Image (cartoon, rainbow, N blue to C red; front, side, top):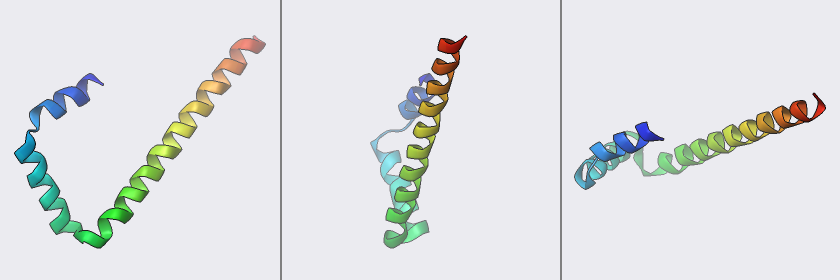
Length: 64
């Protein structure tokens, strides 16, 4: 969390706009929604796996 805050602290408004333009030029307007959909799906799967792992640890703790 701290590293994300530090990283975001380095980026100002102009840098974010430049990065967005570069991404748009590299991938095009049609490909970006597909990339974001894939990224969102990956994050969703990661959260699901993390939650399942926490649930498993809680069940182990209760049975011990």
